Length: 177
Image (cartoon, rainbow, N blue to C red; front, side):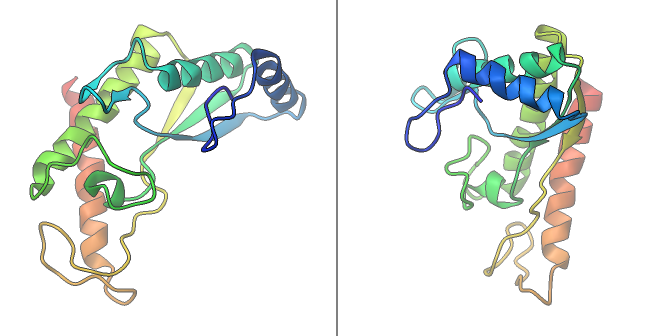
């Protein structure tokens, strides 16, 4: 609630509050959410955690849930390696370094760490309790980056190794920071 949909429609504040009230009245304990790179300023090719309308709308949603005692499972990455390589439905990714899987994965790990910092340390959200990475770890067809191994429905091993690269990069960045 509070983010523009694909047609530019947006809930007003009254509807956002109503949605959060209904979630609380239903007894919702944890809300799992899609979280995209909302703070990425694609025009200027930089992160803007302060001025991004989408990121700030997302923060207001987290805050509404926190006020109602609802925890958030932050789904920070949907398709792997698609989100990293900009070849999934999520669009052009700020993590993609063309031809360099390791650098792309590092940029993703840094994003995860900065996201946690922004939500928990900067904005004080204590209700973000779970970090989910890639609920759709797949890339249909083709050759996997960094491995040159073919991927198919019967050969999923290369894809799982790439998913593991992403998870390890996020874990390392969180430990480092």
